[in-house]
Amino acid sequence: MLIASPDETRTESAITEDEIATGRDITAAELGDTPREYQELVVGLLRGHAAGEAFVLDKDIFSHWAADAPRAEDRFMVLTTIKEELEHALEGWRLLRQLSDLIDWTDLSPVPSGGSRYEGFRHPTTEWAEFAALSALTDRVGCFQQEEQLDCSYVPYAEAVQKVYFPLEKGHAARGRFWLRELCKTDDGLARAQAAVDVWWPRALDMFGRSESSRQHLYIQYRLKKRTNEERRKAYIATVRPELESLGLTVPDNSVGRQFI
Image 1 (cartoon, helix red, strand yellow):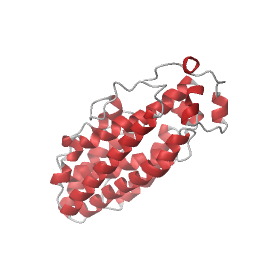
Image 2: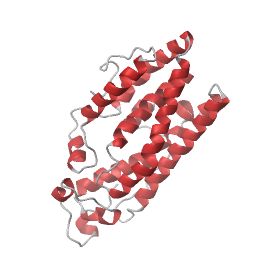
Image 3: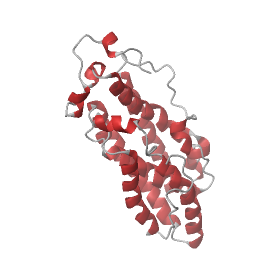
Image 4: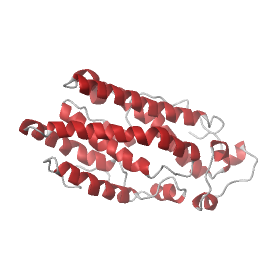
């Protein structure tokens, strides 16, 4: 997606990896002066929001619940989540537009599509319990990811996480937990919630990425993230597993159904 290397677009002195690693924060105007691998990491984060958040438009996975959720309250909550996720996409697009001299977004489309990063979402939710589990578990992953980016080294993204992404993501996860709690109040609802958690627990764990990924260390070195994939995954498990168990749910073994170990 980057269209030129830094020395082809800027004449100012370069900002080094060590400067960023030891505390220098980067503005949009300075991104072209940073190492190319840093630029690629930042653009990848922004592109993930701009193109990825629109999965809520997928009628098989998400958007049909705006009409099919069991209660009017639930339907309007789903609509609110769709609106807010699209706000996330637009914020990612806004941040990318700041970098028009560095990137080419001609292939960027805010339309649900395949791809390894979002493959876990390519699972239709035909039961309300499945949608509740998707919301409770995968949006909670987003919270664990974003919480450590509140003060990341790329200033525009850190500000977006503080003001747009993280506050809304917490609300999305809270709605999912609310729906799961409501389901678990009856024996039938508990059984349906259990089946849904069995499906979405491994998908949520996979969202943290591969434990052996080499790229994760670049994110940490450049202060775009603070922990490894496995460290974040373990923290998620330690927090979310007891929450689910308190509802009467049995959480699957962490290695069952996984694609990225």
